[in-house]
Image 1 (cartoon, rainbow, N blue to C red):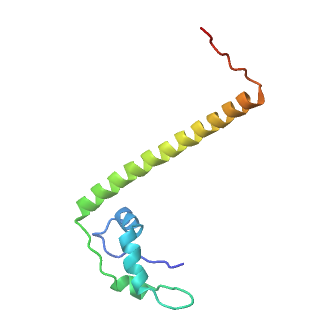
Image 2 (image 1 turned 180 degrees about the horizontal axis):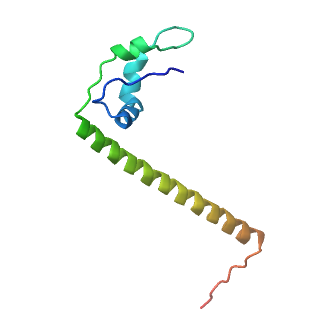
Image 3 (image 1 turned 60 degrees about the vertical axis):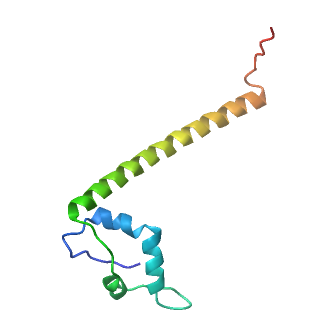
Length: 106
């Protein structure tokens, strides 16, 4: 675990959170990791890691958009879980015979 303090007021903390989660950032960081048997990282490595940061208003816009997407994905996950529970319950009712299926023959 590493605690890092952000001293640059031109960086939106939410933007940085999303940046750190990207595959590209993780790959670049992986190249800088120290140690052979146990990987480790220190603040010096983080301080020297060069990253491209857009203007603060653009960072905010990007962060806002990503937060909206995250909220939508969370909502979809909740709906999917509810539907899976409903499906499971219906299958148990139908397969156990508790609910009879009516077949319309014409």
